Length: 265
Image (cartoon, rainbow, N blue to C red; front, side, top):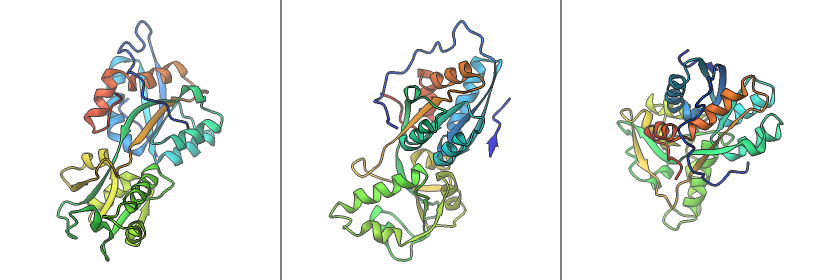
């Protein structure tokens, strides 16, 4: 769904760009940013700040899981910027021909957390309890970055004696549904339709008063690199490039960090 907001190979982290994006030039017109659903709240704030700096510009957003967005772009959807929650879907979009490989940039990072409803009816207190029989676990579909990252976490935990080699198998036996995105997974936990789930840390932070979080140690966690790039055939390439650059300025990074993302070093 297109939401109007107000009127591959991954690269090593690079220094944030100067805060003078678009200085000396009047940027005007409209762009549509296709962004991973986990970026929803942060990008709404980012868009507000960008439009405040460029009053004649209008930014709209289309939020969905990165695989869906890459497919839409490759089918010719009118996108100007793509922000993906992993390198895989950015690569899909690049190979589709509408994005240039050299234009993609790492701009933020995220990691995983286990959540439960706030009242935690299943009394899940430790990661190992994700495998307890009868637990109602909700995960994202593996086609979405958060879904694949969740499986990667389970693989890493299964390699540890404390969890056991069959940990992934036992946990997946508890899955009652696979959803399209982390935001849908989060909503189902808030509504009490599951006992536990794995989402991005930023998603849990967005509903901190409605869910409880169980941290995943760094040695087991999966750190997601988010990439952003302008669409080469954008109807307003100058504005698209300015938005991409703004996400990597000190101001843009501070906005993203305020929403729980891990900024560039």
